[in-house]
Image (spheres, rainbow, N blue to C red):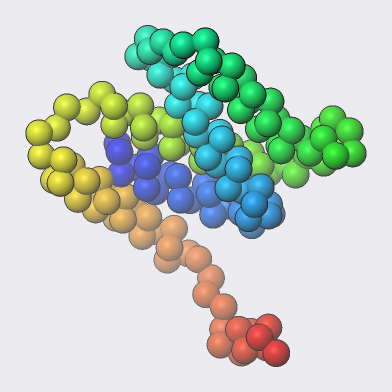
Length: 145
C-alpha cells in the first residue's frame, strides 16, 4: 500500500497536475495540501490531537492553500485552474494517506520496508511510464534554438 500511494499514485497525479500549473504553485499546493490533509486524516483516523498554536497554523495553511487554488488576485474563484489543481490536490491526498499508513506501520527493519515500497511503486509505475510520449531529438534541439 505504501508503494502504491507514496510512489505511484503520488507521482502520477503530480505529473498530471504540473502540466497546466506553474512550478511554484504546484510546489505550494502539493506540500501545503499534504500537510493539511495529513493533519486532518491523523485527527479523523488516528485520533491525533494538536495544540492551539498548531491548529492556528493549520487554519492559516488552509487559507493560504485556498488563496493559491482559487487565485484571489482577480477575485475569489476567478482564476481556478481546473483539472491541474484538482490533480495536485489529489496528489496531496495520496501523500497524506502514505504518511498516515507509514505512521501505523510497526516495522523493525525499515530498510526492507523502504526497499519493498520503492519496488512496488516502481512496478506499478511501469505501465504509466510506457504510455508516456518521449519527445523526438528534433523537437528538443528546435526548442533550444
